[in-house]
Amino acid sequence: MTTYAGTATAPSGRFAIVAARFNVLVVQHLVDGALETLRHHGVADDDLDLVWVPGSFEIPLTAKRLASSGRYAAIVALGAVIRGETDHYEHVGTIAAHGIARVAVETGVPTIFGVLTCDTLEQALNRAGAKSGNKGADAALAALQMASLIKQLP
Ligand code: INI
Image (cartoon, rainbow, N blue to C red; front, side, top):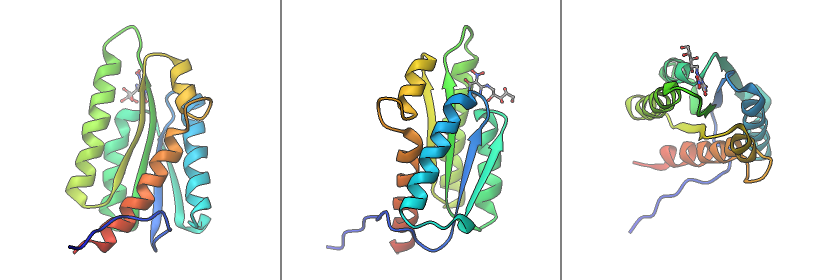
């Protein structure tokens, strides 16, 4: 039996972070967590690109463009969708989730879902490093592992 598993050691290749400015107070913490993790695991600043988009709705198109360029080992998508008064929240969250998954499957480039979907700003801040870990750091770790795994698979 052959077992495959990605490691967190930085593989060769570039990493891109696509970050949504909407709820930037939260998303900046996700970006900081992701950058810290990627650098900690050996990704050089020269191999990192950070792309800001207006909101999480715009992440899939942007991630698709980057993934299709063939320049990236993995892409980390970061955003914060916080429940508001309308169902806009549901649409944005669903479109971001489905769109990001589609980019990964259609391009073969690991495209990691680091978009928070929360009821309140407090919950979002907690998941962006204040209390319950940092989802941006988790997403970066998943990107490293998936980049490594995809390179190993036959
Ligand atoms: N974008 C987010 O990233 N998070 C949200 O919570 C959000 N809400 O609730 O509206 C949001 N909306 C903006 C959306 O992503 C687009 O930028 C906008 O609709 C323009 O296409």
